[in-house]
Image 1 (cartoon, helix red, strand yellow):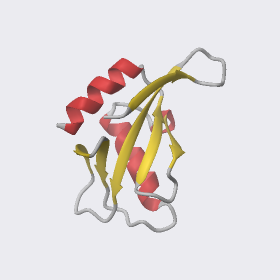
Image 2: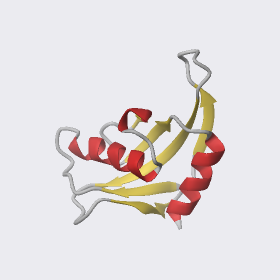
Image 3: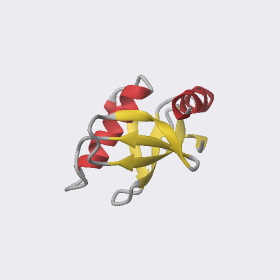
Image 4: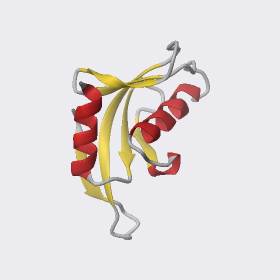
Length: 103
C-alpha cells in the first residue's frame, strides 16, 4: 500500500500521511477495504457526478481511519478513480491501518 509521510506546509509541526486510494462509485454500500494494486479500495454509494463520489470517499476514509472529515484532504485525482489523499495522522499509524484495511 502506498503511504508517504511528510510535514505539512502550514509550519504547525503536524505530520501527515498520504494514502493512495481507488474509488468505486455506485456501490450498494460504502466500504473501505481491499486492495486494487497498491491502492486501498473505497467503495461508495454516491455516483461519480459533480464530485459526489470523491466527497463520499473522503468521508469514508476519514471514518475508517478514525479522523474527522476536515483531517482528510484530496492531494490529486479529483476527476479520476485513482486518488491520493493526505491524512492528519502519523505515517506509521496510517501505514498500519492501511495494511489492516487492505487485507
